[in-house]
Length: 114
Length: 111
Picture (cartoon, rainbow over the protein chains, first blue to last red):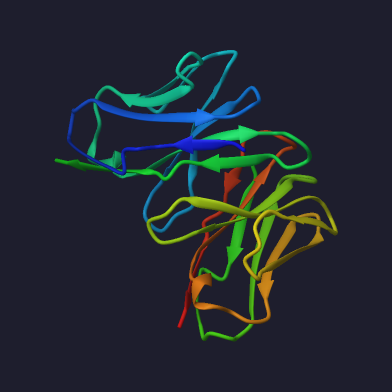
């Protein structure tokens, strides 16, 4: 089955630092990959979508890129702000059959200190 | 614009008691609907999905059931709660096989 590995459980940065979160995945299909952000007490929000066609997505200053050779995709931001503090999940989308199944990584908790 | 509403916002229930959680999507016709469960500090695990009224598929067995009585409504329930049911329940929708959008969630505490 599909799997997603997100090894960084927690990342602590200062404002204006560079952010890099990596995910690796395993699937037998052509994947569509997502990054979701979850603020405390809220549901996850879609942040970025990356497909094998475009290899890259950009939103709200975040950039997600995909590397088929290493079956990895990562999230980066040049300069984080305190308001970026949240949990970031990578997710693999598999539309096999009639279930559009999202397989989530374990999440990376980002804490940004001012 | 589409809106997704979940109720209640939070519940505190006793072990062995029944549970019913609801989700409503407005502004989207015939969406795919999903239920997810999230342990505190954990990842999201898909529980059920539905592509049409009256049809619900189970993904994980957790002594829970789901129903879709209307096109815009998804219900999660159980007759007997367990301690392990505590967590954050999230409803999501998608348009066919596109990206999924999540509701605000229901926090459940089982004592």
